Length: 107
Image 1 (cartoon, rainbow, N blue to C red):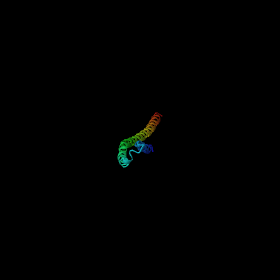
Image 2: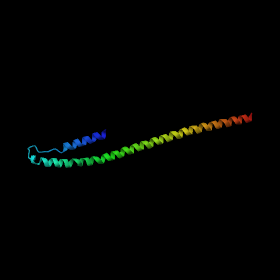
Image 3: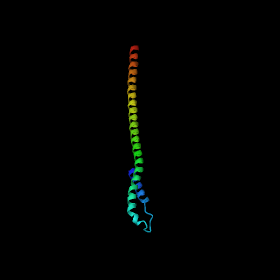
Image 4: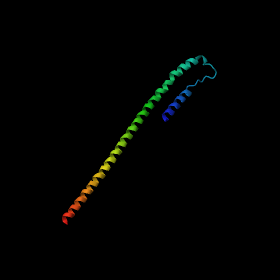
């Protein structure tokens, strides 16, 4: 949304920038030439807008990829923590069984 608004504002600013400063009508015979030159000049601003758009797209894809990698790391950490809990429970069960066996042998 911000990118679209920025593009629209830039185009509007470009359209307002190229105004005729002839208030007396001296340049009226050159009006068609002015329209042609304006139409040739307007794509120039598009070229300057294309570069930040591409950079913006690259940054968006980098942000998305970084988010995916971070999510994967969080999921891995969660899995490792769950497995550590399971291993800890098994270790406690083995220790309890061993202690009970030792007590049974002593009795």
